Image (cartoon, rainbow, N blue to C red):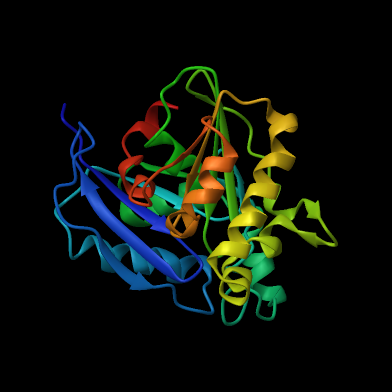
Length: 247
């Protein structure tokens, strides 16, 4: 059976979606809507309906969203518990609504199709990994996303974005606000510092830099990072929607 997959890449500022055929080819151009706030789970699912209404019919849905998820259950999500988006005030009622929620089950029940809900960097990685050795995906956007794979198998998620670095966290240190404040050249040096700090932790065979801000890494910084670091297109967050089911 040739299944089609609605894939939604959920970011802090925007939601992007397309429908893929069984080979992972997009059947329609990617569409985007702003991420609305406040954002309880039911409102995010309504956004999925809005996106699906503008795309060809799909047999299943893959969702990549920020935060730590285990088997489709939200352990924590950094942006969707706030009143106005990233780095705004946290609302206790949204913390209660999101944390511990079987969001994968909720999406499947509401949309009446099979659902796969993963961290957004994990879906991104599904679209780019080769399946050989230790491969790490770092997504650069509103904050820092991460995923790692061993021989093509998804490893348990680590919320690296909350790790400390230079009196800050990785999320704050190389997130979008700092890129805008510093400019691409200085920000790229920070990206290099982050990659170099993680290299002895993972001892990877290859690391992929994705997300919307990966295109802002300067050529000189990329050369300095070494041959084991590869820039990949942000579209991988959609393209990985089919392969995510086989991880």
